[in-house]
Amino acid sequence: MGYEKTQLLTFIKSLAIERAFLYHWAMHGELESKKIIGLMSGTSCDSIDAGLCVVHPDLSCELVQGINYKYPEHIRAKLFQIFRGEASVKDLCQMNFAVGKCFADACNILISEHGKPDFISSHGQTVYHFPFDEKLDGVSLKSTFQIGESSVISKETGCDVISNFREADIAAGGEGAPLVCFADEKWFKTTDKNVAVQNIGGISNVTVLGKNFDTFGFDTGLGNIMIDYCMNKFFSKPYDKDGEVAKSGNVVESWLDCLLQDEYYFKAPPKTTGREYFSPRYIENALKFAPDNKADIIATVTALTAKTIASAYERFIYPVAPIDEVIVGGGGAYNPVLMKFLKSYLPDTVLLKTHEDYGISNNFKEVMAFALLGYCTYYHIPNNLPCCTGAEKRVVMGKLTSLY
Image (cartoon, rainbow, N blue to C red; front, side, top):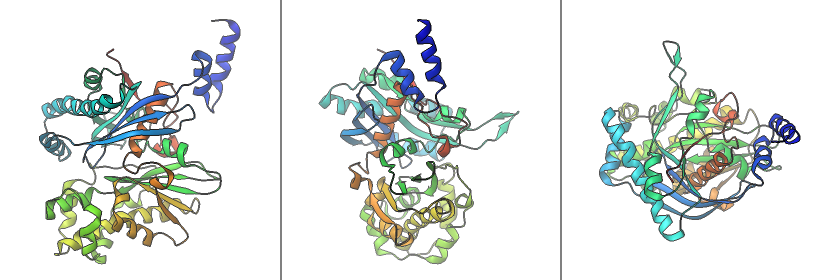
């Protein structure tokens, strides 16, 4: 490499903004659009979401096709054993490879129709997330664990796989979540309004984008976990389709007020949570004080999700800036009763929309986000947001598995 190019690279590396774009350009030329299959299995574990996406150099993303691939019955049951802490190390070892095969099967459905992508970007299935800086012999135990072995996905599909995104952020001092804030900033940030991009999956998380402040985000708390748990327990259904059961019940305000006192809701960001905290034991303890009417239980826990979101805005967002618009995505966006509760708890001045209003799938938004994160990993572009995760610096998240 010549002296002048060495000087150029030294200068480019010193730039704080868009450094990775420039460095890659100097080394390899311009960025190119890539066909990527994004893979995501969320906290609800209702299915593997797979989407063929095209990510462009300006970091925009198009969804070509998305599918919801159902886990085989006994695989899903074993995952919930893991979530409940009833699994052995043998179970974890086996399920890492089994879930990888399921992820590959989901990809191969898309590949059979559209051909191979440039690579696959897999979030994996989180089985444990521990964002607390506890120490053992002076060594931090902050950690996260996603299964869905990338080597299996690569072998079964014949594609390179980028996976294991959260670890790099935790290694840099962050909580490893929320990661979708990076995509939210690229896709929803404008110069004329303040926006809260609210995902309601198993857990709810928000990204706050504004005109006069840096992006920030955090997990607001429960999403659909408690609703789904109670629907399964009392109605033998996986979820409350269209909010029909909640609609038939009444919110029991005294129980709702009790549920709202949980310490997580008062903890200041950055913060993240999951099934480890809002566990079956947590829910069963809460149900000891529940009303007798089962529909009232569903109505109240649905209101809880909406109320905790609105309360998080009051505590942690409105003191920074007023919000003009809330854009909801995830499974919760399809629950009209939940959306009605949320609208009633938000100020009248706030517009409530969904991702669909912006041409982004409520169902496959996170798949698209991980396609984007994988694109950035491929081109060595830092893809975490320390203002959301609490990391010490921006890092490139993700690891490449290539068997071909």
